[in-house]
Length: 312
Image (cartoon, rainbow, N blue to C red; front, side):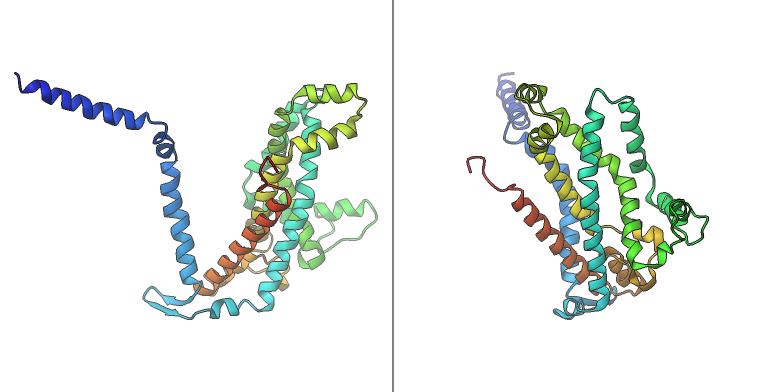
């Protein structure tokens, strides 16, 4: 009986230690982020390291791998790569040009209490984001067909313009890609900007009205500065999404666009990796794409002052 007392105390001490660890302010945050860290190390970091290694190799089979140094990166100096880079850059630029100001303006309108049926429009504009890109792509591919009776040609015919071969021309390829992207992601960006607008105090607008500010003054001097964190976030994910675009191009032209008119960097990775079985070269394109997106986002974050301290 006398020996059981210290044993019970020992068990109690161990239990309290475990309890203290799980209730510790220093340990608990790491426990919550542990699933993300494990998934990141497994599915992202390992994949990135493997891709970097593969970009310096020629892979002809599971056990037929040869180290080729920078040969895959030197092979990037070809017209297909620069065409894909141009298409991805143009697509990213025009999607930024449309999908930043347009959803911001619509969010301001939908945030106004004077807008009739704003909850209906909020829901309706988000529905395209829930639609499969392949299903939407098939609809848009037929809409931009070359016949006079297709939707796009029927619309421009009402303005006296003749039919256009939308899917066979470089000048229209970027346009139809941006139209599909706008249709899909407009509602998502509106949600981002609406969430930012909810956090702006109405007192700021009331004070501005007392000082004689009109609607345009309030938009440029209150709304846009207060939405700066949301704008930075939307620009960051838009740059990534623009250069990572593949599904829209695939939906229009499958994996081989005529004359490479809709070939993006990710589409080029798909062509080389799966159609031509050159995984080493495809990995080199992927690492180059990663570097481009990283540098561009670093530049835009610096321009927005993201890395400046509040005291600066």
